Image (cartoon, rainbow, N blue to C red; front, side, top):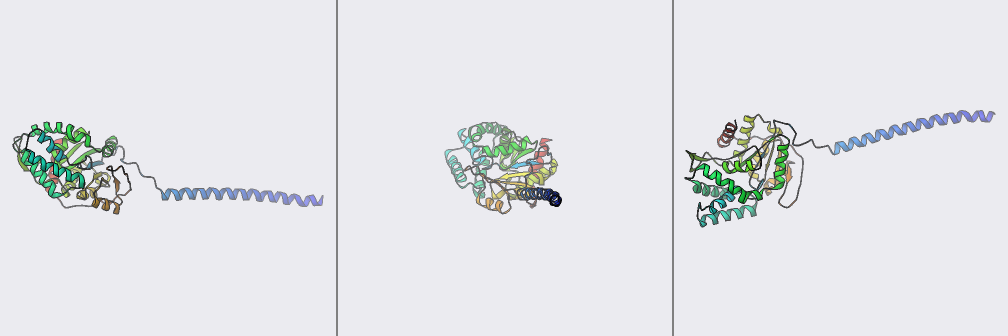
Length: 310
């Protein structure tokens, strides 16, 4: 009996220690699991929803040429005008060369673009604005509708589905840009304004083409007029010429980027999308908003559009 009495306490003590050991192991395992989950969460943070549904102070701004549409809208417009005998074959050859160069290079060259604008202005001089708008609708169906990048179109639609406003911002004529924006179901367009008197084109521009820094100023002015928060807005472009516009917003995207824009975007962790080869690269990054010098042409274009919409 003495031996049995001696064993009993040891058995009870061992059982208590086993319970304690089990509880300690369970607690350690739980703590380890929580720490592991926390480490994963820190290493791979979830991206916030974007675009944010119902954010009325957010909007999206899209460059047109080679971002929304393959090639340059102005060149396609020129082809349509040639078909309607607005100018001779010699001028068409120049338009064709400019378009071929643009598609091969995939970038905007100021000299080429200025030459194309001068050609277009001389062609439309003396024609009524209403006539060109009507023809522009036909030209969109003939030469532009099939050249819209589906990927970029989907990005624009995502903003629209979220209840946000979406504008085209382009150096193309505002009439052409407005037609394209309407056909795509977008809010509107900012574009280069050609002077007209009594509804007839004079062959001159109002101010300068909406290009480079002027685009940024147009977006800034429109945002102020519409009560938008640029830090919550997005901008999309293929060209390094639009870095001022992209730097202005909280969500910049490089779409089918040229070499300079791709390098700039990677250095700043901007998002990249390339629909030309099926490649799709994405990198999250929200840069600080950067200001640029004021340009009266861009500001006037934005305010004029705002007034028309009101």
